[in-house]
Length: 256
Image (cartoon, rainbow, N blue to C red; front, side, top):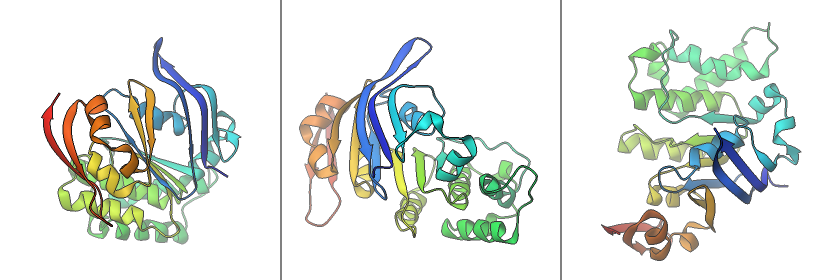
């Protein structure tokens, strides 16, 4: 049973069509990368999958129409990590991550020792234990990005929607953070938007390539990321190297 199934998915905002009749499925435990030029619709698609935008056509989550899910049930099922968060709250890191446990409680229930144990685990998974008592407004953009991901892990959602999860992170934390997400037990279903094609190819089982709101290619990174596609969609001449048993390497040559 697919986690997501989209059939003629269409999103229009302010009278302008952003996504045009998309058809795709996402299988349990898979990692799907959304790639495409700026303005291609990656963030809009993530927001639609998160139940944050109106849509037409069919969009199913666990074989139930997405717009029929109750908000609390949806919050238990999926977590959305936004691009470039600005966490201007007077909370400590631990308090903010603890909010990820809210969907598991009624409105008047307090947080339990079990909730706080989940928070400690999430902070440890992202090497943030020393940040627990820090105020959010003292953190850099990259540190805030990691804290928001920790909140998503504490939420225990089976589906992670990640919008440019490596933005603002230094090289170590880009790879370290995504390695940790990839090694989560049990595995999560991950749908993530990336600008870096080689980075997407390193982690994703499957790519969805968007261009001007249309799905122009899908499949494994080795099948999809060809010099012809990179030229036509991303307007770059490039060599694509496919070492045996290693991630793709993309050598950009010149803009088209």
